[in-house]
Length: 444
Image (cartoon, rainbow, N blue to C red; front, side):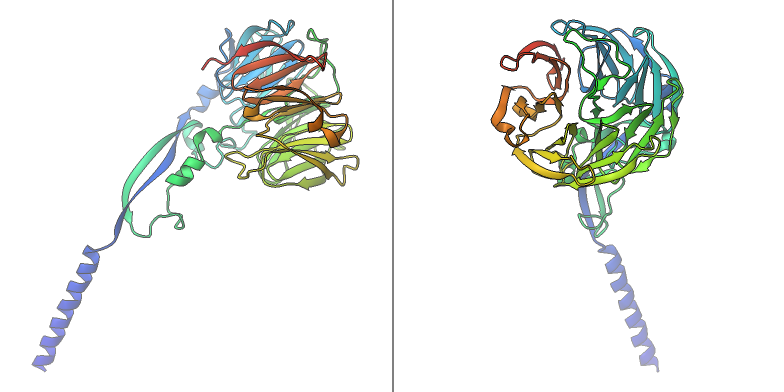
């Protein structure tokens, strides 16, 4: 019995030593990853930040809009440049409208509608040097809709930026790794983070175009509603403003211009990018296809049809029986497709792809009276006769290389184009001799 007790004690001691050794030798590993930390501003500071000031240089232009001889260009997250364009050969800066968090705009009468992070603003611009907020509808847009997957805490304020930070720490084996899902919020493994560069998290949105109003060369008559570009998230049809989020469309009744009334949002799917109005319909671009909605009930757009394509960034414009869609690769599009698609929409319930043309890296586009304008990224501005949709690239009218292009607005005889270098204007009244009229440069 005594020998048994000694053996038992020795066994327990050995087991204790073994367990202690396991604890002391627990596995650790060092991991380095990138994280994006939000930078916050208070709601009060954001909501008190609207006003007019002296003109600024273009630095990070994102959107264009034209109304009543004026060009409005958004400065991403900061405000809107106002330019007098009575003489397209000599455009004159007028003022800068501060709007924190602005990406999109549309104008009816003297009221400019714009997003300000999560809010929708109705701004009276009757006096472009002393604007006033006629109405602010709070929390219209989902908080963080421009963050593209980055996380911020609404309780701490508005995330106005994200700062990249490299973190190295010692962790338990098996805590993290490409398949473990153990990274903290906003954390990226090094290789993933480089693919998700923070520059891609800003929305490259612009304003939807109106196609039913011609504007004279010198600037034109008064318009009730302005004209925008192709990479739109805002557009006005009748008495409604339509604003698309990454997953839905929000109808806003603006029959009383100073008092926008929000209707229930309509879920569209995921990765919604642009909206273009044509003949009482909305043509919606997403990363996976073009969706057509009807406006029989303006406060509740109805689904008509969809045509899918490879996963790709895509704005849409329409004229007659055809929709023109540019597909491009990009950091958030996850594809290598760069082309122009021509879709027959003579039967809107059954749109069909008829032609595809290779492009370099097409972004925004515009069409007017059968003339097609394509911003082919770093390949420059390309202009085509689109009278025969089956022979578009064979009928190139002009090519302006050496410009990194983003979006266009074709007016009557004058083309507005925004690119990395600034705002360009072209006279295309003679299609055999298209000339650059002016440039307001971006100041880096």
